[in-house]
Length: 379
Length: 91
Image (cartoon, rainbow over all chains, first blue to last red; front, side, top):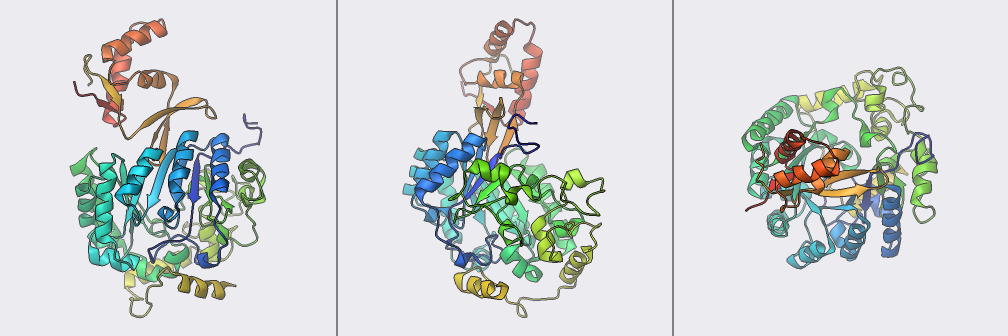
């Protein structure tokens, strides 16, 4: 027994508070659910305050305010102040749209610790095309605001076929703007990115080039800016330990109060997830079916259950198993040992062959109209 | 290597905090955490930009009734400086 008295489960360390699915951007690789437009009302301020207090009491210490665009909530400053008072390290994960000088100062006064700013590319044209908005100049201004407040800045750029060849300029831009960390996050193919996978999946040669460029910048910049290159699992043949293990560290609360082991888990069939409107965070984390189903290794089937790597990758990602093999209980198909691995190989080969150009399959931009269309298809 | 006259302090990127659920001191930074062992926590708590390295060593030697600690403390401070946890205060 652990000191918490609940078998092997340890308390959460990370709370991702998805305050809203509303967003001024329409990114073609957004990780919000494709049916976000039909989701219910957002939690109110009092409910969020309670969720923060309960998660903190349980042991969560890192807190991400995310979305959608969290700046669209006008109670963000109040929630940051509350969270900071509870002892959370507060991270704002934002597109920057809505961050004025006034709000930046108010968030600083509230105790916000750090801002992660997303960029879609290094050029105005590509940034605006990929986010389907005109935001590039605004983001440059926001980057300056962040530095002016003395916040550490993580710049996050989602990498894919259409921007991966600009990686040298992307890193140069991040350095010029004074980012302490740069996350070059290869697209993970869920939600909107899965809809647009053929247009977004890079070739192996593109990836190798990008990694070499990132390596040479690392050597040049040293400690000034840390560069994280998040490799895409489709090309690796190796499953990732998704969210560091189901119900092991991460707790996501969606805008409507649904508690999830990861922000995309709601797509999984045959599994209900509790809502913070009905249950305490403690009950949700330790006792709910949703958080216990894929915890540890007990749920595994072959080839995972006897695999020597089962503790390292915990069978990979349940959402990816469901999306690709239509069964959330099988091995993640990105693993070479998965009987469904051929599906991944086929997608990578299509990317190599350069099939599916944007003219044949136009990008599906994230917006309410497309969301309602995709909801109707799935139900 | 850090010098005995330096006044190290926590870098703005990091926050030092005691976590009762983990029963340990941690360093918090953007989207991450380092759990500290007891000696590391004792040293970092004294890095306030005013105490010199020599003073930190002297305090620890008294607090733990153990000498000499100079080499261990300097080795840790140098590592912490290199990792960016600490910066040297401007004199």
